[in-house]
Length: 94
Image 1 (cartoon, rainbow, N blue to C red):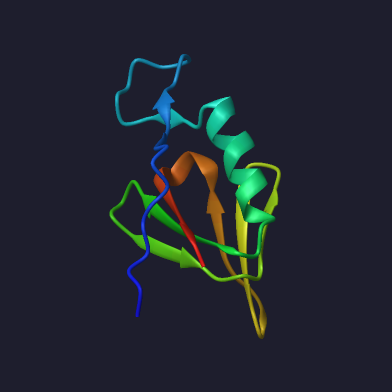
Image 2: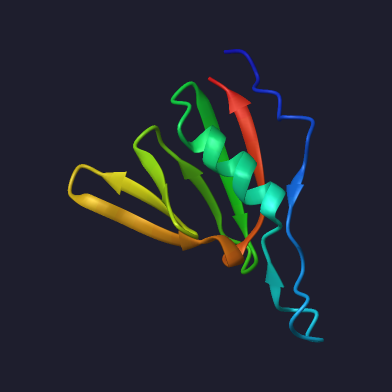
């Protein structure tokens, strides 16, 4: 099996301009724009790394609804991930 190579363009979030708390970050506009483009490509695997250390691999049945990534399963919505909870995202060609 061929090893997947991550996209060379990192998509990280930037510190919030509204608070001095370093733990609170908001996604950059570029992050949201690129993520929304790749969420719609079914040939791209996406791995999200959350601030709490959780790693979520999105399957092909996903969508972006405002500032929330929705992961769907056979029974409906499996997870709702706020963009502000995402630390970084990796993209792989499937």
